[in-house]
Length: 307
Image (cartoon, one colour):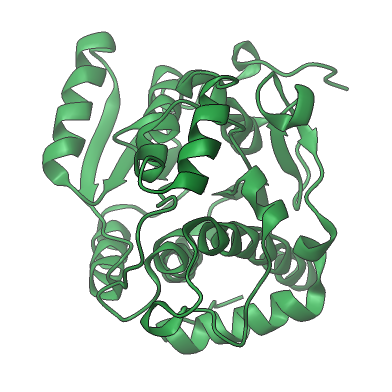
């Protein structure tokens, strides 16, 4: 049994295909570099191809032989999600790891192209649709994994099924909406793992959180008093993006991983530290909420999983 996991335990990934959403910055960028260094073919799925290509150039400068490509993916647009999936499926016949990493954190109220509150729309709904559209490729790949990046903030929220989208900004609070999107990531993780288990598929669905990591995800935190205070507090205890990516990388590659496991930093409060197995809150394990969210997500996206 592995008592303490580290990147040195990652084997050769040559021949494997990884997708990392939001791979051009922060913990996604660090994950791409780790996967590429071990020989994987990595697709950086990013909203801005310009920023993705700039990030790719930096990776190639450090790792000349890195097998990394960029593809456009805007999770705030169902049209873009479908287009990405169509192109990916036309090019690749396997997908070993789908890391659903991209996200928004505490922006002002806004809606996506399809009318969804933008944090739930990008952090959960876009990834739900992407995963469903790629699921045939995933389940055809031996020992494939889906890794959803959540957050400690899930502990501060719950599903507001009466007003999930904060219609017209009613009741919108940036952190409240963020927390809802992050508990949605976990409800989705556990429900998909249950469905995969029931079908006897060779797929693992896992989740991870980065603790308090210094990335541009927190760029909106200076916008109001509450998030400004939280941002200053977090800054005092933050770890780097590299350390923050390790729970997600462990979920992607730990040979002893079990589906439905949640990883995070092992330090005090889960803010930083080495990647370990952690527990999400009781609400994230609510099967009625997970099933309800699943049904709503299918209705909103028009995407069903071929399980």
